[in-house]
Amino acid sequence: MSISDKRKSIFGFNAYNRHQWIAEMAKTVPAGSDVLDAGAGTGPYRDFFSHCNYKTQDFCRTPSTMGRYTKMDYVCDITNLPVPDESFDVVICSEVLEHVPEPIKVIKEFSRILRQGGRLFLTAPLCCGIHQEPYIYYSGYTPFWYNRFLSEFGFEDIKILPNCGFFKFYAQESRRFVGYLFPKDTSCPRKILTFPLKVILGLWFRKIIPVMCHYLERFDKEKSFTVGYFVEASKKRFICRIIDAKSKTHICNSGF
Image 1 (cartoon, rainbow, N blue to C red):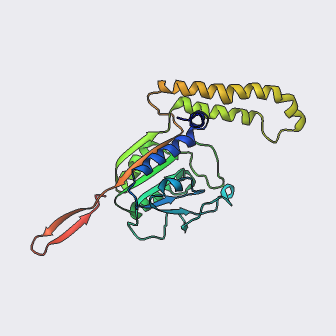
Image 2 (image 1 turned 90 degrees about the vertical axis):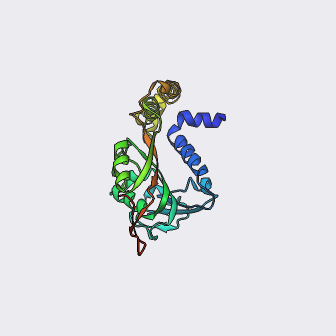
Image 3 (image 1 turned 30 degrees about the horizontal axis):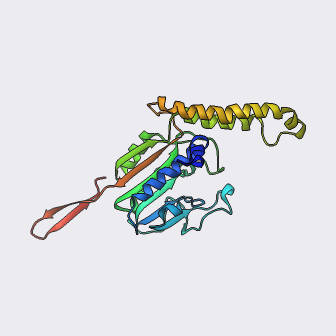
């Protein structure tokens, strides 16, 4: 691991681990596959799927992202994509569900547009603060949520991986501490007076604690208090059985 990557894995592990996971998932996708990045935003994963027929979707109305959206193939509601059934081999949806009023409908729509055996790569927080307002409706999702609703809409082989555990979570919030203690809109005289304290506390909360937590992380075996989860699932293949041997009529169902 390079020094740059090591720094990112300690001080910016949340986004770094997420990008690494999606990059690894991308390597398992066959060349030429039809891939949809749902809620693509700025398109950070486009290069990972350069070997695929990569398409993007977003509703493109988040104020903080205006002017930075990647080129979109579909500008629409994520619960109502203008594509036929079974259009894609892979759907990526990263850090989007918390911004959707009806996330269960999103899972249903992904089931509709994925081909049989198609794969879903999904990430979302377990606990987050308000961001990308006003489009933030939930703080996160548990493994029980994923298992229930992915299964309900025809997904199987569900794998749920926590993005680290308590110590890394604590490190992330420790880095926020100094920002809240010394807000940017502080008056100039106060900034000057508090600068020495900011330097000392910044060193402790933004540097030393994250490094300590990085190495303490190995002691958290349960990982039940995490920043979020990485989820992989496959759409069930249809099961066909002959109901009339003479006419060779078949009935098919997807098992849900």
